[in-house]
Image 1: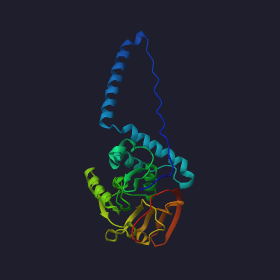
Image 2 (image 1 turned 90 degrees about the vertical axis):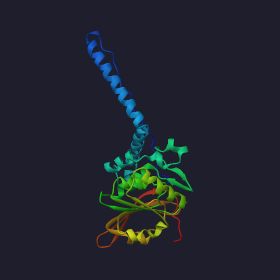
Image 3 (image 1 turned 45 degrees about the vertical axis):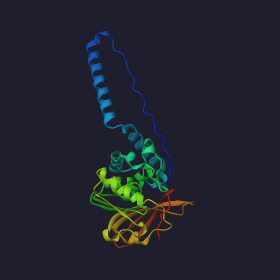
Image 4 (image 1 turned 120 degrees about the vertical axis):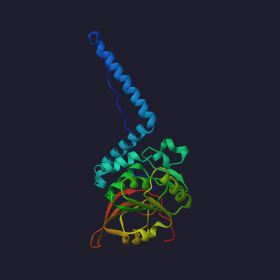
Length: 269
């Protein structure tokens, strides 16, 4: 439920040059024309099969561009290919209200109702990358929102547990995720500050709302060598994205990654 860390405009794709062959190459000209027509037909078919293809590519370009521009702060020069592939596969337009579906592939956060937002694609990519996921991992997400981040995680790991405190959003995500084929995600209504002890330990935990501090229950529920990515700070002051690592001996280290802006983590804590 992130607000924003930076924008990146989609770069235009340059057009291709063309030429007209002279008469001696007439047969080749016919063959080339036929090939071009087949290519155009194939492109039209692909476009009808994937009407969001161009917008998806624009989003991925924007993520890559923003990653390069923020590398000095984050230490991340490129998002892992498997994370980018997951972002490419998840139908982002399905996770925003229908009236703004045409904006879904832009590199910016969007409102999803109830005072919440779907995170900027770059932030989703960065936070997912920082988790260092493997396919056998079990991940806890705090702040389901529309379910977009959970869907990205589900593309990458064995099992995702996600907690949402807003009842309508939890119900919508619980319906949306399996409908879109994400059956390795379990949605729970509750206060994410306290984690999901019955399902712990987790190889990674991601928090998509800003807390005033790192919640001790979440650190406790990390497996040895586990990673927690969380924004910390007040809503109208500077918030910092933190990377928290729990070593095998239980020692915890914290690294500041990037200034960010998130909606607050709410609950009774």
